[in-house]
Length: 179
Image (cartoon, rainbow, N blue to C red; front, side):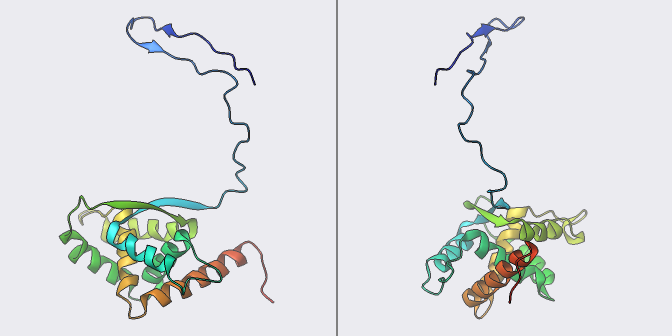
């Protein structure tokens, strides 16, 4: 496919600043079909907690189906936020444990299902995270949720069990019936 280009021109008033116009015909051959995209959102997780999620991902117990990071991370968020004492445990972890760690700690980006991202946003907007209290960012809250799941006596099994429950909830939300 031949492309047509427009030459570079110098902007008026700024002789040293070149203004480039994009070549015509360089659009994507097959644009992303929004209906085929999964409803996930990208967030960050601190490296220690990310490594734990990676161990669950590689675990022989993670099979049939093999859950990926959006499922595993979403399960941690659901476990931390949905429990009766979840918010209290999350705030305690953030205030006492995460604040003791180096704020420059490496992070990994991970996708999470939008339903669980909404749970993160609810926590982010909660009174405990507003003035005059210190503000924790989304990656702090996400990391806290994973840390809470890690601290459970049967953390890995709980995460895989919750991932199955979240998958079932997504299927029901799409109108899939279970008979």
